[in-house]
Image (cartoon, rainbow, N blue to C red; front, side, top):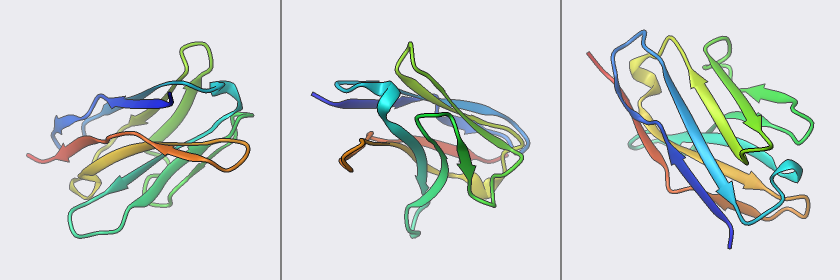
Length: 116
């Protein structure tokens, strides 16, 4: 059974940092493309960052230079380090796994709130 469990969200002041984690199980993690999405109230879900099996990363323009995605193929976990957070980063953050045959799996989401 495939499972993705996000953690690490919370309330942080503008300019602060958080690290999100997405622990996975049920598939060969090293062969999976992983990504982070977010959805703010009243807005569409958007891609934040992605990382391929080879470790190649891509980012939304809005987070470049502030967020870093990484993966640990021993712990079967993907991370999102978020620095210099802004109120506009407030959203529910989801991790997504995409298999080599195109199946997609989502976590339940973790709330990030940036506010003073």
